[in-house]
Image 1 (cartoon, helix red, strand yellow):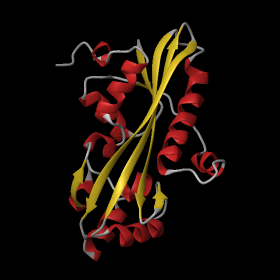
Image 2: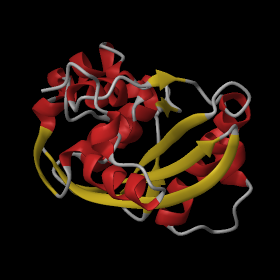
Image 3: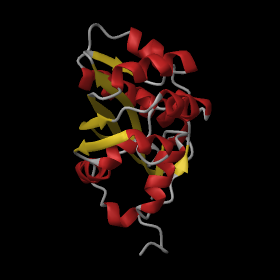
Image 4: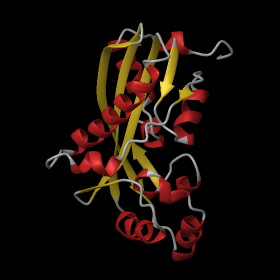
Length: 209
């Protein structure tokens, strides 16, 4: 059985590899803004799950044609802070504004997950879920923030920060699942895989400890 990760995120790939799984990567190409715009006043959980489901469904069209036995894992993360859901800032200016609101405050990082089981080239089962983790942000100095934004790292990650890379210097602590903040909740994915009849241990690479 092949695990297909519907994401181009290096952090999600590294997380799965460290957890004993060597996934195949199929990028969905979903227009996240268009999916979000199609929803009417969604709750935070509904938004990230809808985005994850859209990515999974887009990848299914490609995987079903070539795989008779696979499981697709799709995710989407956003930060809920100040009553607003924010994703990737995209530009230094937006990242700076986000950090002005985040510094010294706390937010909830939500990661939606969509799991699709493919058997004999067809979707047979699916499961979805959202993981919430509270993140407490530090107060980077102006010089530190300038240097961080200049690296480009915060521009393409949800909430303009990472936990497992340079952004970790500016996170004071978390309450909840650290892997979800990185982009994929290992405990939630294990439970969702079980719902579609897949044991995570059967996906471990032969060389896994």
